[in-house]
Length: 529
Image 1 (cartoon, rainbow, N blue to C red):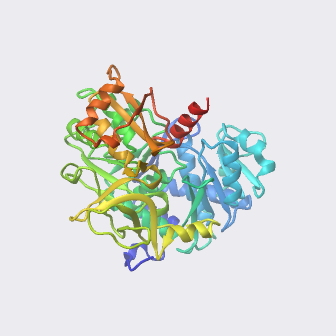
Image 2 (cartoon, helix red, strand yellow):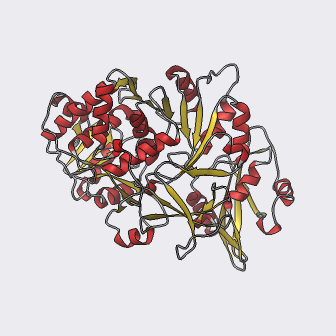
Image 3 (cartoon, rainbow, N blue to C red):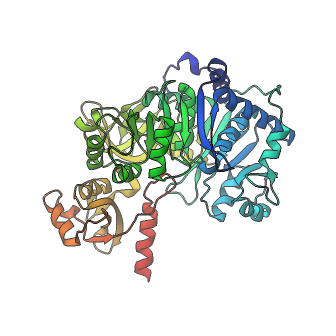
């Protein structure tokens, strides 16, 4: 955990303690706006959220849920209200929360549920038939609970909730060192891997992110990030709770509806992936869409184009821009670029936020001097304890309390962190190291380009070659030769892609992040065909 001294308000507490304290201090304050399984959006105060979580926890306890059990939550923002209530109910019981991607294929579901040793799984009604069909392969699952209409083979969430008592007591004491979550993340391994969080680590993450975004009790903090992601839990819901702010969960990534919700909820701060802001800039109508109450846009989850930052600053001069850098395994502790840093230090992802440290190291974990690229390492009390049941992977990733991120970056002479690329996305072409993000940034500077994604592809002589996928702005036109000519004065000749493919759209994950693995698969399949 390093030599960091924890603030007193973090010591000896659990996630459910945090909810109880907020409800006691500001019972009538706005805590949550989210869509329920009925399709209607609802608002809950802190006391209403505490009341519902306690009532559901009692209903679950009657079913045999107990401290130390593991429960999978395969839920999205279309039932965001029930999802958040369920999460806090499980924390009340001391049950380990295991968010599961609602877009997983059956084989992925089987792997994650069994790997995490889930005894219970919560699903939407739409996904309940899939889970019940897979049940013979889910070794330890005792019950499936469906949110929404009743489903054969699953318990009805509403019935469980109705059976509980909101004034029930006798809850277990939750240790700060108790496991709180297993957060599955994809990577270079064959299967998703589960980052183990403890109660203290989760609280430190909430504290750190709330500080990074300067959240306070007057904020209404919104995002489309899906409930089953770390971004929704550790970057939205729990930081808002820590600060006593209101969290708003968009049901999905619909920019027009999101802008309407921003107006209706009087949103002050928004967090999204870089792609969201590209879509926002295309959809925003000055003088028609009233986003005057927005004070801050934060972007993270992927590197933000400098060109998009400039456009965003010009379109919303009253809004402060911030970039956060972190990952699931770090809690996501990391760095934050605030205000003018985004324009005066173009491309930076900022400086470490509270209780976090950042280093740049070589392959032997030795520190590298300012300006020299190497692997980004992060240390914080919010960094995961381990990868669940993966001791060798844990040992390779955690070194003396430092998390090796797998990202390449450098720290300049002023202490600002710059993210160059993911290690796996670096392109080695004829012995030259080329960052895909650098190429994408230069494509973004072309007025016809809306999006760009660059990947490495095998080459018989060079080892790897460069393949760029380009999405043009609506109504814009460009040719491959024109784009190459545009790059000639901006990049060394060995960095200019010989392969450029125009696409209508790019494949994306639940958070809007471009899935380069899908682009690599597409190229492989085309060559095989």
